[in-house]
Each structure stands twice: as structure tokens, then as C-alpha cells.
Length: 407
Ligand SMILES: Cc1cc2nc3c(=O)[nH]c(=O)nc-3n(C[C@H](O)[C@H](O)[C@H](O)COP(=O)(O)O)c2cc1C
Image 1 (tube, rainbow, N blue to C red):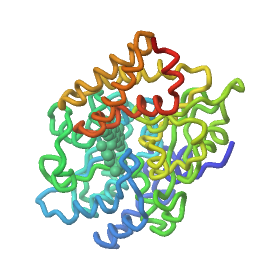
Image 2 (image 1 turned 180 degrees about the horizontal axis):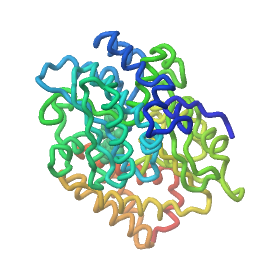
Image 3 (image 1 turned 60 degrees about the horizontal axis):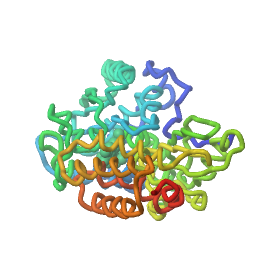
């Protein structure tokens, strides 16, 4: 198996996650101490210089986001960790929280110090009750040791809606409301939880922070792809030999991930496609396998890095059938707040099902493409904007599979 580079998962298997002493023994909480001695502005500048970009999907510069919340004056500010992890095929945040919960708490406390927040929330996927339990034990131990100072952290449980991973829907949900996205702007760093400046970052983003503060921005910025430095944790599923997770530098190519780390396709079958980034990810054909797994390289080929889920399909898979199931997922998960998504996801599922059942003509494909384009421009949040990606990219790269099912 090829060599991984474990930065976020640096303590995986090396410490007892329920013993804070183990984490401290590995140098834990030194970064928080260092951060406090640096001062808020120098700390934010350091995180900005590292060029750490969000690992939750949007790839926004983390230090820059923090500086917006720092610059907004308010009585109260909040730090929110997005641990909703609702993306099918993704379990990287669970790995971090189960195996090294203190690294997440330390990252959140550093953010709290940077922006001037004393309260943090971890919005944990409702289907992860065991993780919430671990987090609560970790918080209790950190409190007892006094390592977090005046920074308080509370775990809030999600209720199983995919849209609640979208940061403003998540904020609504923590406030006790129905999980629906808000209109943006204002963005959470200026007006978030209870109208106060709020930083929402992903678990993997926060878990990167202590080591960046400890080893410095230059060290981090030199790893992986320069425009999206560091590592990324990927979870491999589908027709691949090693169905497991890998943390690799961001300049690793898709081919290396599937063949070197993933061990290739079982039964010597041929590769057909790979979907990266979760259900709303693009389907990528073999001609693009040498693309590096960095945010901008993926955007350049019309794909996204998303959550880091990697779903491999071999030559025997019926791609139209797979996309029909995905369309059903989005129809189910659309929250219904905006018409383009509410109607668009239902119509997409309807037309995909018609095609899959051999009852459609080429006109339905044209309609699907138009509908997808309209949704990507007009839906309120990323759910509806990205939902057409699997449809549009498979029509583009695997047109013959659609044609074979038309009347
Ligand atoms: C439908 C939808 C679901 C999302 N689910 C998640 C999620 O489960 N976890 C996550 O970190 N970000 C998720 N996001 C992205 C968040 O809105 C947000 O960009 C992210 O939490 C910011 O953190 P980061 O800058 O550290 O990536 C989702 C976005 C959308 C549109």
C-alpha cells in the first residue's frame, strides 16, 4: 500500500481518545497556549498564510473567514463545528471525532480565541450517537483539566436532514427552528447564530488548526498543491479493493488514490467512472484520472472535491440506474423552501426514472439538461445548485449509456 501522510489523523491509533492525558502527551494543547501568546491578529494572519481552505466542501480560506468575524464587533460571537456529515459514503469526520476528539476541541478553542468567542457548538450528525457520547466525555475531561480556559463547548444533535449540513440551515437548526437555508448575504461571520458573528467550519478544518499553529504556516503551505495545501482525508467505496480511508497530500491524483491506495478494481474489471465529493459530485471518466485531488484542479474539470467521498464504478455498473437513485435522494432531501429545488429535484427524479425504465426520448435528455442548468443558477442553496451535477456530467461523459435506454 502506498504511503499516506497523516496530519489530521496524526494521533489515529496512537492515543486513547478518551484519555486527555494521551493527547497532552503527544503535544496536545501546546498550540492553544502558543495561539494565545501570539495575539488575535497575528494568529489569524498565520492561519491565512497557511492557506488552509475549508474541508467541508466550499474550499473557502479559513483565516480569511475568521478575520471577517474578528472584525465584526458584537457582544457575543460563536464558533460552530459542522459535524453533520450527511453525505453518503463519507465518514472522515467520524474518524477524527472518534479517534482524536481533543484535536477538534483544541482547533475550536483556537478559533474562539482568534475571533473573540467564548461559546462553541458541535452540530453532530444525529445518526452518530456514539460520537456525541465521545465528544461529551472529551469536553468534560478538557473542562476538568482547565485546558479550554473560558471557552465552553456544547454538542447539539442533528435530526437526520441532509440539508442541515448547509451552514445556514445548520444554524437555524441549532436555534431550534426547522432546518432550512437562509438567504445570503448576510454570511454567518457577520450574522450567524442568533444574529451574532459566527464561524462555521468543518471537523477536518478545525482538526488541522493545532498542527498549523504548532508547526507554522510555511510548513503547512509547502505540503500538497500550493493553491489548496495540506492533506485531505478520502473515504473509498464502490468497486475498489481497499474500501477504506486514506489521508493523502492534495496533489495526489485520482488515479493514484484509486490504484495505489485503493488497490484498483476487484476481479480485474475495467474502470468505468468515479464520483468524487458525495452524491452531488461529478462523475469522472478514465480520461481525467490524472487530475490532482485539489480543489481548483477538480473545479477545472467541472468536478468538486466536496466531502472527500470517492465512489468507484466498474465497467459492469449501470450508470443511468445509479444516477436515477441519486435523483431520488435529492427529491427526498430537498427542504422545499425554494421552488427551483423543490420542483427541480422532483422533475429530475421523474425524468431519470422515465429514462431508466426505457420510456424516454432524446427530448427528455434535452429537458434534463435545461432543467439542470436552471437549477444550478437559481436554487437558494448548494443542495439544489449541485443536485444536477451527477445528471449533467453523466450525460456529458457517458451519453451512450443514456442513448441505449431511449425509445
Ligand atoms: C446540502 C449541503 C450539505 C452540506 N453538508 C455539510 C456537512 O455535512 N459538513 C460540512 O462540513 N459541510 C457541509 N456543507 C458545507 C457547509 O455549508 C459549509 O460550507 C462548511 O461547513 C464550512 O466549513 P469549512 O469552511 O471548514 O469547509 C454542506 C453544504 C450543503 C449545500
